[in-house]
Length: 274
Image (cartoon, rainbow, N blue to C red):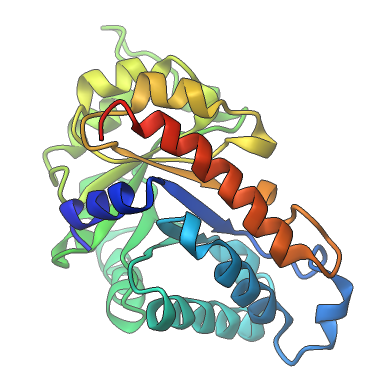
């Protein structure tokens, strides 16, 4: 999926919602444990309930890898289900990969060849040769960690050099030498507030994947005020606030209602550019 196709989906659905599939076997409704594949059964119902309100899904690999082979099978089945039934959805493998070149090339092969996923999150710490293997695939996206929403983001990402440039700003500037806004996005946490202003000065045209609204306390209005551009430029993720909106038998219906509520808020924010 290219940048224009992504924007067309946003305009058509009046939404830039990404549903995070952080599916924890210990948190899903108990009755699903009787299913042959409880994780996939949960994901399938969540996807069916939320697809009309979202433009992307983001399975977090840690939740699947924690279950070994069974988890990986559930992840593959989830990806395939989205592709077969909701082909307009942008799929993000939230894997946070990034290693020496030949290892990154194998990670890229996994997600872009074997699974044919649209994008993967990548850690930039090891530099250019750890990122560029992911950039050899046309119409596939690298989503580079820039400024995250966790408390520890200040340990490194906010540190300044002798010229006052913060580390996340260096990541943004340097990485633009590797790819443009047609192939690279950035993770920027919703809790970072007005830092979006500084980020947009460096990457005005790139899409930003924004986790942290809802359960983590980020404000959608603030993210849009400082982060939205003429082509929206935002994919805002909500995980727990949607998929665990209800932990009983009506979990899917509740997820749909929660997703619709976020979509309606997004439609208001999009009025300024559509």
